[in-house]
Length: 174
Image 1 (cartoon, rainbow, N blue to C red):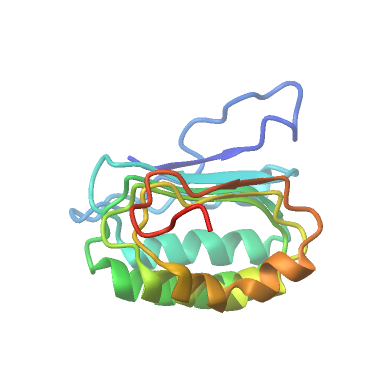
Image 2: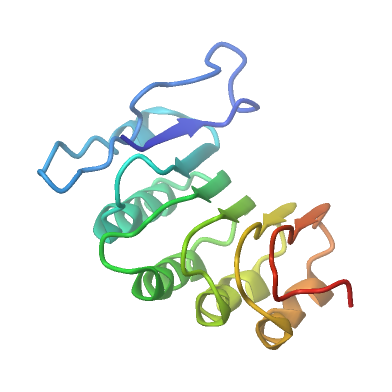
């Protein structure tokens, strides 16, 4: 199961809120992202390798955070696989994130199939974001051409403190 948790900084009394947003798996389990509504602070939405992600659920979680005016402290895709394919998933995620400007950390870490087109899908979000403090693109396979797509992000975002491009065979030290 994939869970979205409130940020640790959001509440001193709650360090982890279990099952805030339980993703529907391919068997049609419940939709429980209403808990975004009850938690007053920023949220973390983190997806792991447990089972292939259903894109509609990911899109609904991002929309739910925006609709309830919660900023997303951390949005993480950690070794995920998408049931509907990576390329289409990142096009949709990119469109959803364009409307959510207040994301502090984004991790696309060791997600199979993330390359130039997927990074280009995130470019409108990244280029319009001024609050992102951490961008982790570990284990992706984009090259310098894709970096050109997000060049405005690096010029405008003065809050970026951490950029991780490790384990990317196609990006050198240049």
